[in-house]
Each structure stands twice: as C-alpha cells, then as structure tokens.
Amino acid sequence: METTFPLTMAELPKPFLVAILEENISAGLGRRIESEQRFFDDTLLFFTKEQWAEACNSESPYAGCTFPARDKENILLLIEENVTMPNVVAVWQLMDSLLKRAAIEQEVLLKYPTAKIQWYSWINWDFVTHPQSSVPELAGVRTAILGSLWVVLITAIISFPVGVGAAIYLEEYATDNRLNRILQTNISNLAGVPSIIYGMLGLALFVRALEGITSGTMFGVVSVGTTANGRTVLAAGLTLALLILPIIIISAQESLRAVPNSMRQAGMALGATKWQTIWAHVLPNALPGILTGTILSISRALGETAPLVVVGASTFITTDPTGPFSKFTTLPIQIYQWTSRPQPEFQNLAAAAIVVLLVLLLTLNATAIYLRNRFARRTA
Image 1: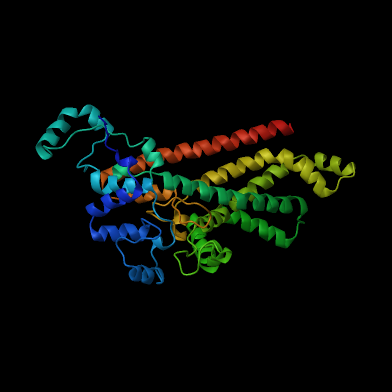
Image 2 (image 1 turned 90 degrees about the vertical axis):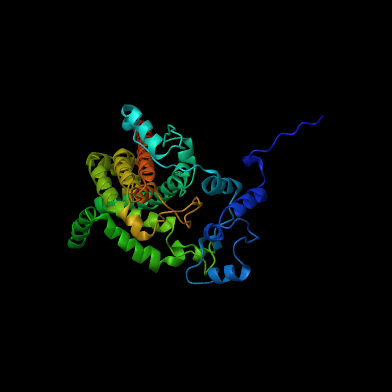
C-alpha cells in the first residue's frame, strides 16, 4: 500500500500559492498588492492589460511597472499576512507580564474570552530576515538593513577620497591667501549646518536637477517613463556624502597637521618630490587619525533621518534594494514610521529596530576600528 503525505505550504509551487491568495483576498486588496509588485512577469490577475498599460504610462506609474515579479517567499508572506495569520487583540510590556500576570489573565478572560495568551519576543531571527509588512507579527527590517548598508557604502565611497583629497590640498599645497582662508572658514561652518538643509539641497540637486543620473535612465538601467524619479539609493548616498564631507575634511586636516614637519623635510632631502613624500610618509602616519574621523562621520550618516525623508526615502517598501538606482528605506526611517503608528505592536517593533540599529552601528564601528588598528601596526 502506498502512503502519501500532504505537502506543507512552503512545498507548494508558486502558481498554487498565488491561487490560494487570489481566492482569499478582495479585488481591491489584490489590485493594491499587484500595483506594488506583480505576481507574474507575463500575467496580470487583478488588472486588464489596458488598465496596466495606461497606469504605467501615466505621470505616476505603479511601482510594479518596474519591479520584478514577486518570488515564492514573498507570496508565502502575503498568505501569512492576509489569510492565515491570527489576529493580535492586545499586547503587554515585559514588566507588566512578569509582575501583573494574574491581572492580565483576568482582563483577557473578561474582554477576550476566546483569545490565547502567548509570550512573544519582538527581536528574533524572523524580524531580521523578513521584509516590511502591515501585520506586526510578520514585519521585519531586512529591507531597511540592506538599504542602510547600500546608502552608507555609497556615502563612504564618495566622501572619503574627496574629503582626504581636499584636506591634503588645504594642508599641504594651499597658500595662506584670502580665498583659501574663506574656503577654510566655510568648511568649518558647513560642519555645523542642520542636516535637513542638506536634505533640501539633495532634493534640489540630486533628485531634481540630476534626475537622469540618480534614477539610472542616463545609463539605460531604468527606461524612461517608469517610476524612476531620482529618489534612489544613489541620491541618498550623495546627500549624506555632502553632509559628512566637512567633518572628514576637518579631521583629516588635523591628522595631517599632527605629522612632524621633520618627516616631510627628511623625505624631500633624500630627493623625493613633495607628492612622493606625502604619499609614502605623511599619509601612512596620518591615516589612523583620518580613519577615526571617517568612522565617526559614517556613524552619523547611518543614524540620519531628516535628510533622507526630504530626499524621498520610502516609508513602506517590501522590495530589497539591489543597486544604487533602487528605491530604498533605512533603519532610522523604518523606526520613525513605526513610532508614528498608533498600534502598540508597531511601537514594540520600533524598539526592537532601535536595538538592531545599535548592533549594526557597533558592528560597523568595531570592524572599522579593527582595520584602522591593523593598518596602524603595519605602519608603526
């Protein structure tokens, strides 16, 4: 006799999962989900081809016009979110759960007689690996973590060489004249400008004026007429690079100034050019201090919210960023969005996301400090 075992939800093929979802959600919800991201590349479920073409060619096209189709994992999350997930009717904080257990049980018995009391930790592996969701129990910070890493990477790539180069010019080559004194004063002033001003500059310059570059249309990455409008990872990285550039320049100048002049004189006395002396002797000795200033600057960029809100970071997005021309969100934006929600569950998620942000910040800083110390030992 042959024995068969029923398949679990995760073992079902994608078309079956989509069919389950289609049968159990309303047409309005289906259109909203499909407008954000299609179920299939070649098939529409809740739109006709004419409706979809008209929407994609309009001035405000759907995000699903450019995003790739949802994968199987995403469909499973939609089913959990809209079909199978139990409803949470009330939550209590940890201390109340420990000290007022009897009162909570009595309240549940009176108000929610059919409900089940269950311990739940908001910080878990699913929280780190799941994308955003409108259901608190399914919401995660994966998309926000990837967005933060992408933005910080672009910020560092742009700001570090430009900042160090500017510091070398100002400290080693610039003469003491009126123009350079004005330039130095302005750099010091820019270090204290509120971050939202940089956000307004980024909106005008990178999102609007340089839209063709920051959206990717100039490079053929995104076709003209789609949702690309400059509000991308690249625009955010450029904006934050401007924000931390004065700090990197000032810290790099201080590090270069700390290198003894005798080292420069000894190098040039042996026949080396000024640039050879700077490259082979001054920079290696100043680099630990330069990296310290850069680490502090990158840490500030990682925690910024105001300029990214102005530039156009998404407050709700379920698609992971895959490159510099992707739509994005970051952990501070995600925390801001959750704290503004009235449900206590989302406020608990915000607290969990703050812990994740602190861990990410400490990890990046520890890695950078390790690399700095390792380089300092090599040059000692």
